[in-house]
Image (cartoon, rainbow, N blue to C red; front, top):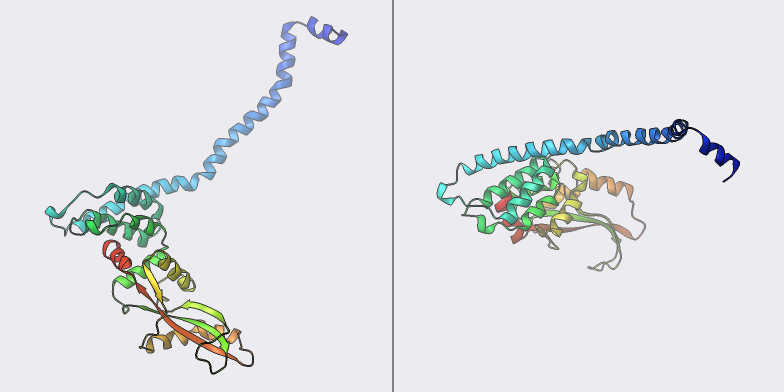
Length: 265
């Protein structure tokens, strides 16, 4: 044992304890300060989620109230217990849609349909996950389709620049705008996203895009003459030997989409 070690060992135990406390206390004090920050930090980060829990519960209560109102017109002998693979995930997802009345309405209609034996057999379990993949704007579009405000199709156009030749089928072209329609402009919050919404509704098998030139050309005139198309043309002057061309086609409700509307919209 070295001389310094002998000196330390010969010190009274009280002195050694004090030295230990003085040396270690700042470290533990620092750790303690850090640990005390954790609850505050976690509380801040989870603050929005606390709001989500509260709003989610309120949303479910509001949905149940709306379901009760819808079921008032259902004869009592038509009531039935909803399938668990529909009602459980639907109520779960209801809490996520507390800030969208449009999405909540779809869940409410779905749950009401699942408790009415006249239509409960038509309720597909995938309807729950489909609603979870819709935006509020897409819910508005499906509602518009359900009310028959349009015809049996949605007219859309693709604006292109094509080679100006006499060939009926163009070999070379460039797309400037795809799947554009303005029929939902006054309905949705983000009209500029309608083409994306149509693609999503097609992905979910609620709509099908068809290359079909509808005979009612008037349906397309208002789309071709819209501000959006005029502005695109203004910003894209065709080169010599090229010209603008509009391809007309449509989106239709699929049989599955009609069933979704019957049960959820």
